[in-house]
Amino acid sequence: MTEKQKIVTFGCRLNAFESQVMRDNMEAAGLDDTILFNTCAVTAEAERQARQAIRRARRERPEARIIVTGCAAQIDPKRFAAMDEVDLVLGNAEKMQPDAFTNLGSEPVRVNDIMEVKETAGHLITGLEDRARAFVQVQNGCDHRCTFCIIPYGRGNSRSVPMGVVVDQIRELVAAGYKEVVLTGVDITSYGPDLPGQPSLGQLVRRLLKQIPELPRLRLSSIDSVEIDDHLIRAIAEEERLMPHLHLSLQSGSDMILKRMKRRHSRADAIAFCRQARELRPDIAFGADIIAGFPTETDEMFKDSLRLVEECELTWLHVFPYSARPGTPAARMPQHPKSLCKERAAQLRQAGSSAETKFFNAAIGSEATIVVEQGARGRTEQFAPVILNQPAPEGSLLQVAITGVKDKSLEAHPIGAHAI
Image (cartoon, rainbow, N blue to C red):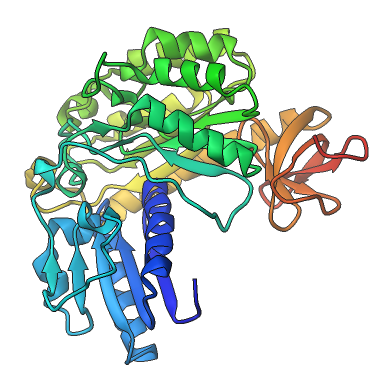
């Protein structure tokens, strides 16, 4: 990407993946003096930050063309089009079209009904700025309607990338030198019902590992434990190349709040799944998304979420203070003061910090294999961050000994002289 081209990405891993696809398409189109904002709509704060960044970019580069896309732009295109700083608004489907940037035209808004999109094409990234791991989109959209979530209206209904396309893409990435691949999407555990034969995510995982034996490590992005199929359970138990790290979309530890969120699992379901997965794979580590201060959440209901961290042995927490999204059912429920949501979020983050410290201390004296990232850093199989005591080739697999803890990371040194 040239100095005059810039992409600013907000939000999830899928957005980051799509920004890489758009980067390639922008370069192919030869766009000059263009700034693209790939927005997020998961919270009102994410939208506010995007609008603030757009205004700042216009002040800093008054002659640049500013394009806005992503979930916030898809859901409320008129709001972004009304900004004096914005030249073009692209929808989430339009932004991924190969010719999206070859003929920009004079139309200020190109956003169609995302619910009409029936397929998700496989997009291969030709080059990644981070050589440590590659992300492959296997699914987009969501068929569920959680009461707090606006994302289905930005992404559309669930649709899957055919298995053969995913296999071919990962083969290319492995041939290009990537040692770790992450399967990503909006709701990847809903993979497959729209494809011939209705394959499941577990069947996709097992096929990938069988047909690409040269792939050292496969990882999953956020999953919904209630949707996990028997094939994926078997893969967790039997496939060493499937990394022992699962990030769960839990959202709450209270059955009443889960019901009001319109989630499909109970507190007992979450605990049972984590127990089963740990029995099958004793070295597994769990991350989780949890919302603090959901409407009507009492102190006791919140304590259920705090207790869930310990009962599920969660290690990596993504905590979100509840933020009302206009147009969602939860926004019409009785709201808590923002200060209470922030206070409860702080308590959850403290619980998460304690869980991390426990995990780090238990790892001292053990060995791990990491994928080396920039700056002599890396990630273990359980996705724990590692700081190396010496440089190593970026993107390589390296066996290390864990010697200590520093700055919320494990300290380590290589075992032997060469990377794997």
